[in-house]
Image 1 (spheres, rainbow, N blue to C red):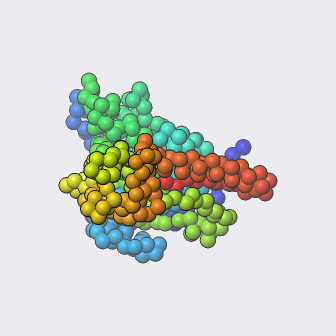
Image 2: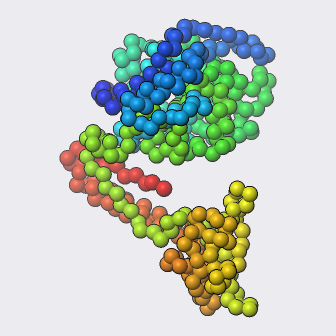
Image 3: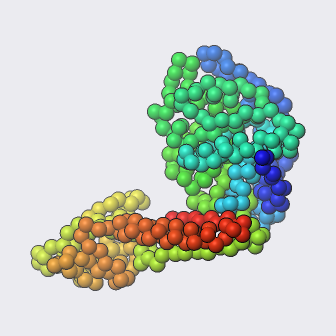
Length: 391
């Protein structure tokens, strides 16, 4: 049985929003050059001749068309696409790959994923869409696969192939200097083969690849440009398309949105751990908190009392905003408990991170129960139930 794919307007808009960023770029034919290494490997690379100013003008035009905030400047060629879960994000960026090839002749693409589960989902979609892309794009020749440190020959094929190449890579496989791809080997450094191709980078769920170390690892791939696709971006840079939960609901892409939240007193995500309560010259407590030190947070033990001088964690943390409203109102020596003005109390051996874990357990339990109830009710009607956790 072959899966039938529909042409959906919102997906086409998301695809065009990326492809049109390079309006005015010439179509590149089979260009190759020599990579200076021991074997003089000939590499087929992506090329971009369009100026950054032209790309910036295209970006602002697309943002205006899509009713998005305009970027102030274009520091780097990184773009964000916001798509609600369940609306075909993977299908959209795979279509975008073929459109970029058809329009501009670009051949080398890397899909960076944060986990094995997402990698397997991407590979499964590539498997199931073969017939669709063959019919839709006039039988293009393309290869795809996952990168493995045990199959390094795949990188040489990726670099030298004259056809469309799609490489799916876990961020963990190239983010460290100790990774095989970054090591000096008999035939040179494998990463240099990728860098020479100027690959177009697709980042699936970039909020999981947001540390400086991982950003640097992406930059080290020497991308022509990069696009991050997610429903829950941690950092949005040069947004070109948005399909958020409300818009998805308004377009009738999801039938109903139900939010189930757990009421938590911990509104500030503050870390607090009570180390001990003592009675020496009055009741005192030693608490571990995050203190501002030279523009960095460092976890330190501070001594608190109930008097005006040492009762405010905001002051003791050197104005860490997470501790606003945390003023000590009571210290219980017998039960080893400290109480704060916002109603939170903490006992020895327990920290607020522990309380968050307990809260999440409750959320997971409630979500599973509700999910099964709704599946029983809605599956007979042909309605798929999707449950999400946002943290």
